[in-house]
Image (cartoon, rainbow, N blue to C red; front, side):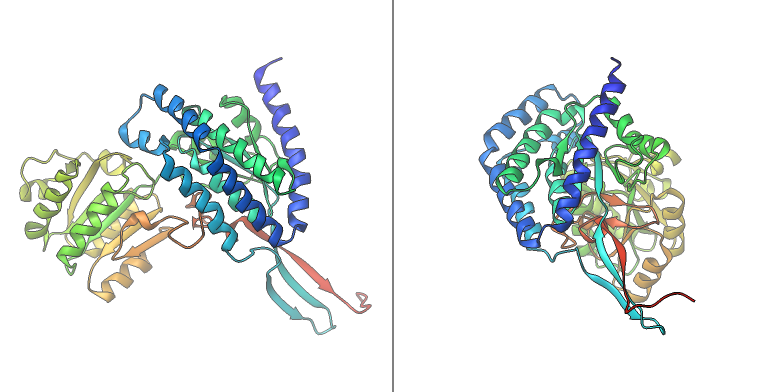
Amino acid sequence: MHMETEATQYIRRAAESARHASRMLARTPEATRNHALRTMAGHLRAASTEILAANAADIAEYTGTAAFRDRLMLNEARVEAMARGLEDIATLPDPLHRVLADWTRPNGLRIQRVASPIGVIGIVYESRPNVGADAAGLCLKSGNAVILRGGSESIRSATAISQALTIGLRDAGLPEAAVQIAPGADRAYVAAMLSAAGFIDLLIPRGGKSLVERVQREARIPTLAHAEGLCHTYVHRAADAAMARSVVANAKMRRPGICGATETLLIDEAIAPALLPLIVSDLVALGCDFRADSAARAVVPGLKPATDADYDTEWLDAILSIRVVPDLAAAVAHIERHGSEHTDAIITEDANAAQEFLSRLDSAVAIWNASTQFCDGGEFGFGAEIGIATGRIHARGPVGLEQLTTYRYFVIGSGQVRP
């Protein structure tokens, strides 16, 4: 039998069992869901040795960049962080059954808009194995079942994590079908998920540009995604110099391989001669390389020249594009031309300039005086995130519990009939 047919049959069977599980989760009391999250966290810790051994096997076969290796790598601290993430989700308010609106019509009908689960969520992800744990926790808390498909780079790690989560679900008395993972990284499973209209309600891709573009191009079901994290930090002429140096270094080099890392530095020409050499020196000490325009190279000789294409590149590595701009309007124009509407920041002590920057941008997340790497569900207080969305429908920015719900209407009458 052709593999894609086998994959389609597998995904449909998984989705049917997930649908039953999601209906049960929607009726499960919050206390039971929270107990399950804590039980799953305990099983992640108990399986740490097996998870790290699986990850070591994945790492041994990996031949990509250091930044992507960092995304793939697990250690005891990162396994513990996954477990704590599940426990943190358990402490968050219940996103279900919230009455979002409540009104009474002139005929006496009372109408309530009530938060409810989406249903069955599909997650297609690549190198970051912790995505599976975060997704499972957020989906469980929000009453959704999830079907995971890990990438070839992390398939052993992803499978080991999923097995621990499944044991936790079983021990907590909830259906194991609430969290499932495809048995391999074959792309046929992605194709099957993309075409699973009526089976999977929402698909969220977590991976590189080619994966996300394929999902957005071929999906027959709704998707929630961002294609690129082409993030900018703009150092305005009224920036505090020490703050600018600290924030830019963190925004680029804390973890250069994540989607919230700054890829382009924009700096006002009024302060570039004094401040840019210091920023570059800081970043050189951290191992960063550069692609700079002629104005920046006039200030800091020896920087590699930037092409126009460099400003359209999500490096996901220790490389920073630099452009000197005359003013705020030019910075915004650059971001509008080259950005991906993910996360963009301004460093300034001028509140009016900051408000103008924030209001003029279309970015899902706009930041004033802080690192772009704060675009993260955990940092937003969501407990974790299931992804970042840059679309304009349903959710934008980090996607947490609230964004994994939709709503229904309850209509309460006293015998009304329609004339």
